[in-house]
Amino acid sequence: MKSLSAVLADLNMLIPGFFTSKQALLSKRSLAVQQTTIGAEQEHTDAATDGVKKDKVSYSRKSKSLIALALAFFLYIIARNSWLSDDAYITFRTVDNFIHGYGLTWNVDERVQVYTHPLWMFLLSAVYFCTHEIYYSALLLSITLSLIAVGIVALYLARSPAQAVLAVLMLAASKAFVDYSTSGLENPLTHLLIVLFMLVFFSERWRRHRLFYLALIAALATVNRMDTFLLFLPALVYSFYQSPRLKSVGTLLLGFVPFFVWEAFSLWYYGFLFPNTAYAKLDTGISTVQLLYQGVGYLISSSKFDPMLFIIIAAGFFLTIGARQWRHLPFLSSKTRWAAVWAISIRPTGMCMRVMIRSMPRIRVGRILLGDYSLPALVS
Image 1 (cartoon, rainbow, N blue to C red):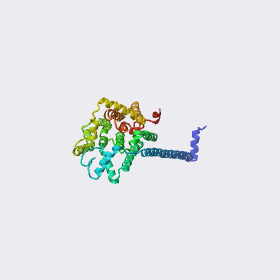
Image 2: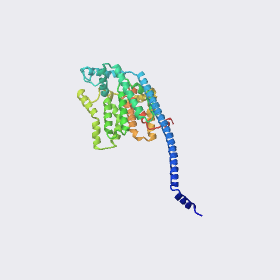
Image 3: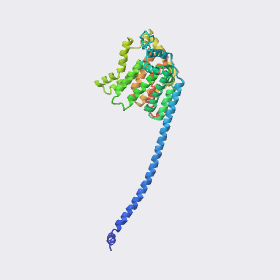
């Protein structure tokens, strides 16, 4: 009896190509079924992908709408509370004299630097030259710069839409920040320069020339208000020690050219390196004990006037330490030291909120308080 293999071989000899055609037919049918299955799966996958894309688009639009709404609310708050302080009119008179050809003076025949914010004064002068109106021009300029600064926090420093919205709302809840987002003083420009400094400090995009841009922004901020140099010093030192070379010293000096130019001009034009107010405030004849006593009351008054300011400062500090985000310490240390030294021992009088908001990690809301921590971590 023949085996099965032998029978199959004989059958193939009698009908050549029988098994080959059958196998080809089976292969074609199998391929057709496989292609149909793959096509169905592909259609299902495409439909799912389209659904995900639609979800992402709708989420993106929703997020942008929420951020835009938060920024619109902040704009409403600062516009509703906008004002001009009496100190601002000291600068306004200098601006008016400057535009009308009488020089950077208070009295046209006396070269005395009565303003403390040269960069802000020049910016105001440029706007006033175009509008020939100071009241609404100063308010509009302040509101614009404040909105840009907070917008950068929400769009570039915060890491999620929820964090961006929360950051904007917290800033809008700070009485000090809202008040000095206008006022006619240099604070809005200082806020914007701090935000730009942070943007360069944390961004990898500027890594190649980071030290130069940091030094340049710090120099402009120092020209804007000389004592704010203390805010930038720790971060500059930190960045310098990332590449401590002789070339880095030259980079720092090159970045600070605007400050050196201003100081040379000030010495030539006014005969002094510092504003007139600096000499008046540093040589008061008041004892250190009295200054410290008044300074403590100064901080207590600030905490009562604007609790949110101290909440943000404390939250930024403890969250940074708790999460061991050591790269953020230069910002925290600079603000904490600046608040303690300046607010307590140097200037324990005057408009307390104008001083305190410089020590507040107000713009750090977008990075220290929110940017590097998840929202559940904040809530818990």
